[in-house]
Image (cartoon, rainbow, N blue to C red; front, top):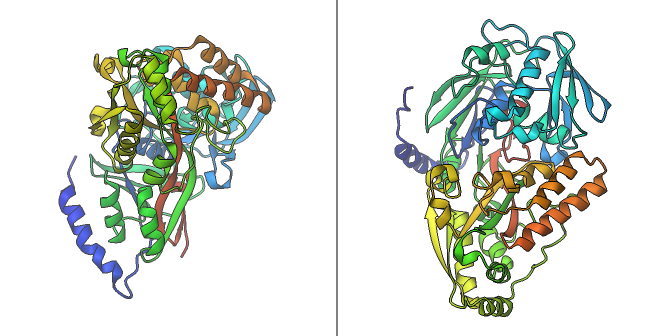
Length: 519
């Protein structure tokens, strides 16, 4: 793969020089039909829907593959609508009949998208031997019955409440070409063997840029843009400078930049703030010797000053969360059991536990917001006699900290500031704290058979109120374990050209094919 003509450093320097032009009278920036330029933080590693990790990968996959249904903008309620399916009929609680639209064709010589492709895609993700990280999205799938080329029936083992929000339109629900994937050996990385979507990949320049162009054979709704450029800039401040210089049409920014944008917005710019399902918390390693005593963990919970964190790191633009389930829904708790800082209670618990001189390590991603949170935690917990040592990590190392497959480093972790992009169904956000996820994504090492039992009950319960009761209890159990300090759900904060109408999903990702251009 060829590299960009400029390096990342010269690109940002150039953007910084150009940024000054935006202050001159008459200088304007706007998106055009030719290309939509989107700033993203991270590069791709795999475009196989069964093994993707989200972020840019999911944004690309949504552009080059289809799913039976898809979700609408989170600001309009995240309702689902038909996509590759012409019809979806729920025959009973365990049976869904679908019919594919005509005219959906794979690239290359692979012909039309078929019900056999749907069967292959869903059963592949669900197969425990393939170890897809999204297998939980189809864990109640029995099989897909093929009726004819375009018609099939999804058979479930039990009723599965999250199917319509967590499975069919989400990460595991993308349809791949059976013949092409099998020819590629059963899986693929960034070289897609066949795709079907409004765009195709034109060029990938690792760590710098990924370019999509409109698929000439696409028979679905035509996107408003002929080309999509995903430009990778990791740092939020550098990205904002580049946006102001006209380098992007859409860019996420840090919450700390909001007051400045509100006071002095760039030309032709709209500030976007939307509720998302991205949840932030501090994970305590229950297996670490320092944290084995429940009283020590509770002391840390009592010593957490949530108000100071929300004010200092988030400019009071967000509220305290009481778990990982998205706020404002029936399944989210109203507040934490330990909801306010109490330094006296924290000191008392530490004295009882014989840990009055507690020193703990807090591991964090080396980003502006995460470091701000860590420094506030460090400063405020001293009032309870707790010394917090901050250990910042770059992205590559950070995501191995609690991973047992990466070695024994997890044993040394004490507290980790974490954030996950969640989904719309409560099960999507709670699945990562099940016993089977210990040493994978359950870095607190919270191990509760009762939690797993409740999780399974929530999957098959279709009554909204009863489901809510289940999830309230699960989040209470998480807090009472002492393994979690819930902080907030971060909003998506972005700037975009005022002549586009972006479509945003719950995982904070822009949907390029659905984004509209006003001329």
